[in-house]
Length: 203
Image (cartoon, rainbow, N blue to C red; front, side, top):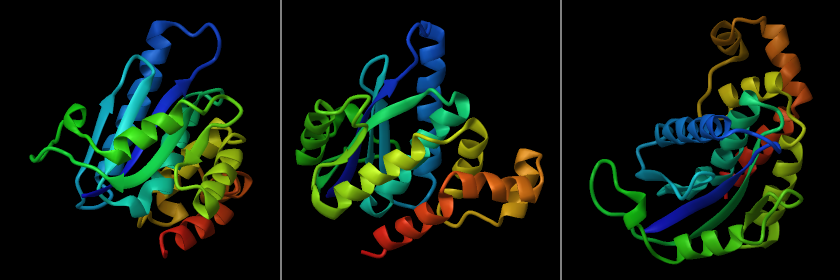
């Protein structure tokens, strides 16, 4: 099976308590559940330690979108939050079943993603193991995401899922005006990101 494996570790502000770090991990967990509902393909999520996580997707098409969704989920909680995220797309095996256990997954996609994560840090947060244009897209997307405010991240998180509705529906869900949603998305650089995601997913 060809898998996209995202391996990440939280980047939390200095002095954060264990409970605050747990809240951040729960935000990632919730984001992973949302990603699992994007299509019918199998996906699996698991924690690696108190700050580490891994998401395997049988639909590699949405890997960049998924990485940005995780970043938005964290920044909507606190604008100082983020995650290093390493992506590898390669062969991998997930156990059968409706909710496969990630700790039983194996293959090059898992090992390459984990190895790439070890090269990342606060100054270089997102990378694609393949390099080239796909890695460049990850680097640029990370640069844009780092500037999101909480309000911008909330709006972006509503529009990253495939087939997201119009801004008027987002405004209703968030309890703000449509104009405020449009302004937040524009300030967050979402129109350019959306165009980039469309191009990425057309490959």
